[in-house]
Length: 106
Length: 156
Image (cartoon, rainbow over all chains, first blue to last red; front, side):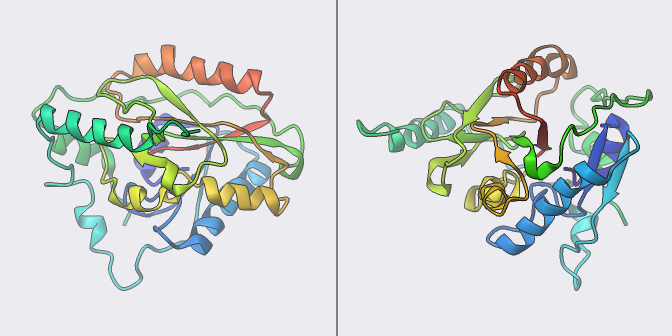
């Protein structure tokens, strides 16, 4: 599964399925299970249809028919979140882990 | 238009030594699917930095991986990754780790069996060598021992 076509072309895996969505949404938009299921189903279908090593199947899904502006800005400028100070990051991590660290946790 | 991420990465990380992209010019290795998907055991691997409950977070240059139980729910999962905007994946992990969708496709008979556990690592590992020589062989070992027929890799 990929949404970065040029990187996948360079890596040249045996089989790939491309969806032209912004990074971080390789299997669909959040809270849209039907779209997600269709993308995953299409990707799995490629296991049975790709016959030539190195094939990249391009799926027809469009992120937003009324707005292709994301393509001009994705992964540019301030795309990456700022790196929090180490103490803040450690604190957030401790809080996250303690949420689950109950005696009855699985 | 298709976004060209290689030049964009070069710009975004212009303060760092240029990243040496993996470029494989040779034809890729090929393993035919041995049986129909509906009879196959399929594993899912995400490089989206998915964590199960109190599993420790990832670090930069971290070539470790986490085992995610296949019945994990949204509430069990969190995301740690520095290289993409994770808000949507945190709100619905199925954007990059479609575990719930794969369970549905297993129940519908599209895949024979969804392997338990699923696998996750944090794709922002600068060293391709570390991935090739450490991370990938370890996960490949796990998949071999689990007798999976195919794996579905979702990078992020």
